[in-house]
Length: 273
Image 1 (cartoon, rainbow, N blue to C red):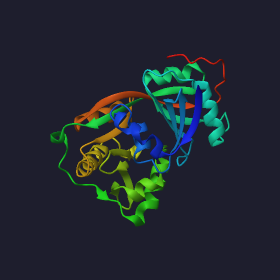
Image 2: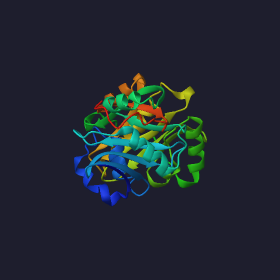
Image 3: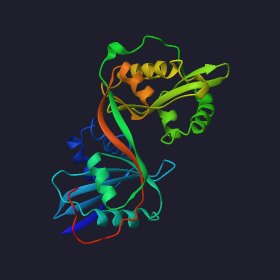
Image 4: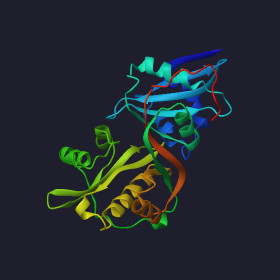
């Protein structure tokens, strides 16, 4: 018997021990740091959980994380249809997520992907000896938040939210009164640290500013958690090399995708892509 339910975090919390952050960092964050703000659309077959689409509406686009239970058949079009009805999204709304290769094939098989997927690396810090000792970046004060937010928006940092700068340390480097490089965190607590929003103004790139900020952010992260991550587009070779030079190693290759909820119910079967 097939069923779908919108569940609260406490109903699916028992999934957490089965989620490996190295391979499922996004979904792990939906069960931890984002647990109070996420919605969990779940599919069950004969009372067994088969898949979850976790939804977040605080970004500039409808954001999702997808998780499926291994060795379980998924009735994917039915899950998409239930999700569309539950959160009241237009089927042509452009949503975003990050998928493993297997899950990318699943979404593609039902024609949901829009545009070209972007290869993406999850990286974890492994070697503290490679970090720099320099402390040239300044901690950003509250009265400078608006200036930094404008800087990040001009740099088209798609995954930045104001709550991150309000709740996590941010660092910046200035030329005069203007920021030329900033960086901070997506998450900053004992469960998980994820660096993010690291950007250098175009005319200041190539001077090692991002390397300095990334190193200092990593030092900050290590003070509260041994598990420090970041994400980077795979084709951003200079950034990947910087992170590797600071002791980061790739733990997972994924794809950033845009997709719609326009999946059509073809039949009652679900392919095991």
